[in-house]
Image 1: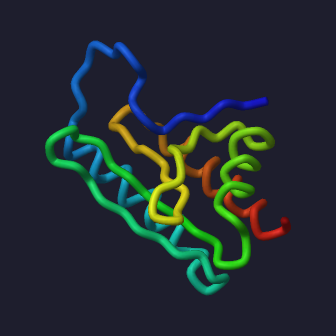
Image 2 (image 1 turned 90 degrees about the vertical axis):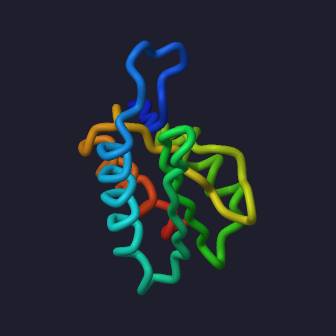
Length: 113
């Protein structure tokens, strides 16, 4: 199974590049916003102090715990613990656009649960 982690790698030597992180956070946000007509709720932010982005999603008719478990165990996508009733993805400057697109495809599978 493919394993996708958009966040930072523990012990990485390179610091986060805030402008790249912001661009990749926007890219994931735009990908998630494509599901707004299907009822997906989306929130996003970039923490200036840590240099990390966060994108949160919530499907109104699917419990976050079930969605997070599916993303992690079936799709191999690393998510943060639930917060504010949403599933959160950390985004770092090292995240690839290919991985962001994979996350979008994984989220698509949640609509069939």
